[in-house]
Image (tube, rainbow, N blue to C red):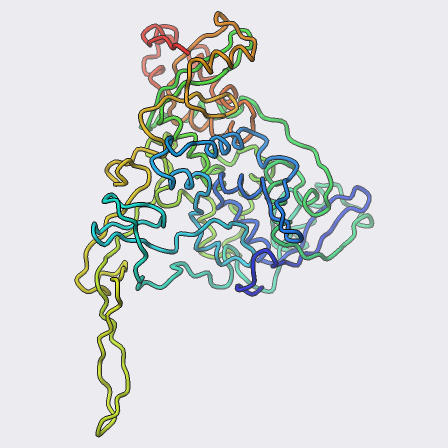
Length: 534
């Protein structure tokens, strides 16, 4: 195992590459648990972190930012990220809200910090900041307390790093190794395991295969992450630098896939969809802050939770193979932390309150603030040697999750950036209220302006009489379809919502107000809705 004190940019992992010399294609890689741990950690990364890490990587040779030839997702997620970048300070409650979306925290950050090669450079929530006047705390250093005072860092009596990874992070550390195939199927390094996979790929003749040994570092790992999202051959693309076939966008697959889901008591929100009748596609949606917070929160969802929500069918590169490898790996090869990758969930306070997907948001821990009573033993020299207790008070107060460690303890209340008053009771989301937004088919989000909408329709050469407006309720089924389409399609609204617009024709069982009365057609419902003026 590499030294933990060594900078991530200079660390490397040894791998043995089995490649086809005729086609110049990686067949499989033989690697240790450290390499597999890093690949498995991809599932813990939020979508916003993946977008940031892969779009710009650091060239360690010249310290310049090297732009990869393509964005990390062949979809609209990149536009969503750029829309957050373009938010002004007046659009969000505070600067922390914007940073939460651009640099979302990894829910498994304590575990990933134990990786030999960790690609996630997001600032972890290791420190706790307190306003001693109001007895409030936060893990965001730049958040101002409700009283207007800046928070500060007290002495923390708890041991840093609450999660210990013994003998490996997600897979056990031992003398054996793993086989990682080009499509990111991962199995223990066994002859019996490898033969069926090699035969399936057409390699009954081993004479065309050669071996090379190579050390790969953070830059190569980031390239594997990028191609894992866009290619069927990420190892060939990243290690050998060869092109590969790309998968076409699976338009409309998500809506059909989630139609059979049972109804649930999920949160719902209405959006007004502006549609072109001649082009049979959605042009944009007029939506309030709840819907915008919801789609912005896609950036905070870890990749593993996305695959879990979509039932293992994300249709994103080889991500589903990676997820299945984690899911099917025998428990004897895994650490106790391994199951977390199958549904990492959201980091503390990074969820969307009005969330149709009902992804659990971790509750903040209880902290106690007060003074310390640290008794140290020292040797004093009088007529005889003896031990006495010395009371040492740490200036500025202390904080701990254990009430018994603090003198005169006061229970702290968590500050929350997703609120105008930064209190839990007022949490609504990331963007300010009230506001109306225009959400493009490609998930470009802007504050709504009637004149800008007219200009946009003029650019598209769409007359007003070609436009129709429909009102759609976004529940769990629609939300899942949008999430899936956002990862694979450049036309997310059309791909994710078009099939839901004609509910009666499709015979849908969607969890929406349009299906609560099966005799009522969508056209009748729309007559009751106010007209949209673009």
